[in-house]
Image 1: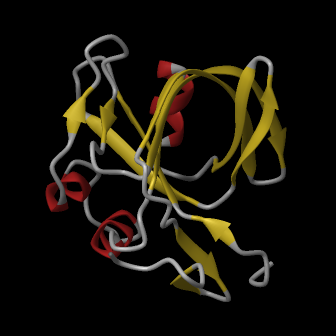
Image 2 (image 1 turned 60 degrees about the vertical axis):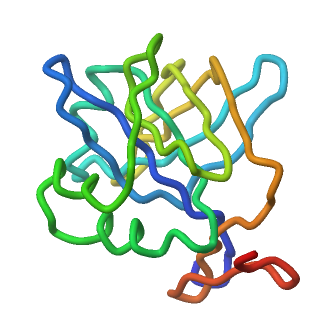
Length: 155
């Protein structure tokens, strides 16, 4: 599995009290264009799982290759709210979801279907809104480390 290169994302959501939750995810992929849908694999043992399943909405933040500090924070044992301390986050006015304004791309989604598979929930999410930067420099995870695409990298 370490040879499957994947774009690094942060999946974020919040509970009814506005407390933010997030997880690092590389198992995110496009499913369909009509309607626009993404697939996200979420471990059922992840701290975000119960909130995500209850809230049924999320933001998928596609990280730039220069946002390694967020990878360290979200892959650590920091309490969930402290993981958000390393960047300037915003809250979507309509969906009430935390998002990273300087992410390469953003997908605001609602959960359409959940399939249980082994230790994970395979989430099919309908994209309600998306945003992207002109620059294309995704952070990539391959062979157990963060990398970038050849010819990309910091500007």
